[in-house]
Length: 508
Ligand SMILES: Cc1cc2nc3c(=O)[nH]c(=O)nc-3n(C[C@H](O)[C@H](O)[C@H](O)COP(=O)(O)OP(=O)(O)OC[C@H]3O[C@@H](n4cnc5c(N)ncnc54)[C@H](O)[C@@H]3O)c2cc1C
Image (cartoon, rainbow, N blue to C red; front, side, top):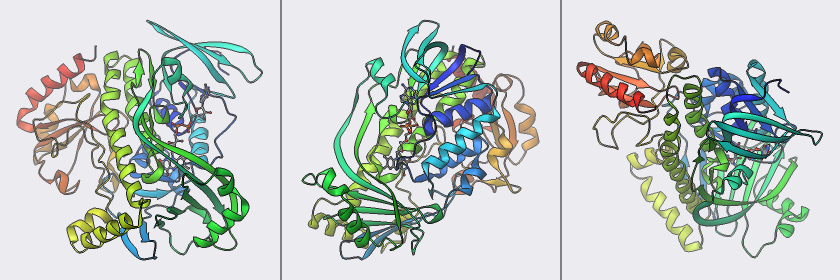
């Protein structure tokens, strides 16, 4: 444990959200305390699907290759009717952000990788087997009361406390913040298997109203089954060995499969009514709960960490003012809710409520598949809410909300074989797209660029795909989380610089 008792940032909760945030703060050089009551990572069956945005965040903390070494990348999902007919295939092949869009992983392994990676940072202190029992806020900081592994009481203080303490978040309750949203509540039986080879690497969705089921092959012959339970079925009867064996057998589990975990989870669809109070911020499951149909619960938490990490660094290191942190909730809230709604809509396809509805859904997909554009829309997963926000730390460019690149995650092409982010470094950056890049580069010196320590990089005009094709003679200001803060025409650089200077001044 640390000799230090004051930290600019303290994180409570060493799940994927807290561990990712701790790694980001480690990369940014922020002294951080991570408090986790358990001794190590979770072993309960949890997330099995990691998306391209999260892999990009792993790249930001230098772990993309390691995480990918334990991940089956680029798997799709195939939807089957009760009669066994495949009626839809989601199998994205495009990689706009530099990574495959759907990937199979194991949460305990990712947590171990993230935890071990913290050893790289002397300025990140890990307090495992320590529990945050209460906290008190003052105008200049937060006092933390912590129980150590031997039952003793210790105190720390921090400038900001980030509560990544999960669905039942004691910190959220202590703040008196309620969860609200949809009345959705469903119980699902979760089975994890080992030694369970699957004939296909893709997820198989049994859209059977009698027994909706998702079978997800994972790395190293693992397999996850998720079965919806009906209200009239009790947990006990569904967890009984005979029932579990029957479900595995009727859903094509390889005969040699070894059951390693079984549990019943109740899923909700809710958001915290407020994501921060003064110096305490909620992130991950503490701020939002989503059903598992879109595989987005953890991915949403990693987006929170990515959004908060650079802001906490900029504020605690004095580069930007503390009001910057007020942009966290407006930037993240709508997107987190869009992901929850997305999951609820996928749930309607995965678990139709009647035979008639199942028939209607199956036929709707069949008709859509006759049209190449619609087929591509489904196969490439273009229905997934794009990573973007409409308000926050950005300068609107006046373009339509649907077309503007401001507030969106910037594409990640390779430039000369190198991934864009690896060229950009860890701070703000200026991506210059111009036929006369030298002239533009000479103009992006001085304020406000030097205040932001923005690294200028020239992007060839043929890089970045169709989305960027229209942006010749433009400069993009990217934030450290790779979202576009501003998109400025080259011949309006002076006015653009003034707007950015005003944005920076607004954080104080
Ligand atoms: C069956 C299932 C399948 C899922 N599938 C997916 C999927 O495919 N993809 C996906 O993205 N998501 C999925 N999820 C969701 C995902 O697992 C969660 O969203 C994710 O674990 C949330 O991470 P977190 O770090 O916010 O919280 P948690 O993982 O819950 O971590 C919170 C941590 O805080 C600690 N803590 C709490 N209070 C204190 C305290 N007072 N002091 C110290 N420590 C404390 C806890 O011990 C815990 O370690 C699934 C979930 C389930 C249950």
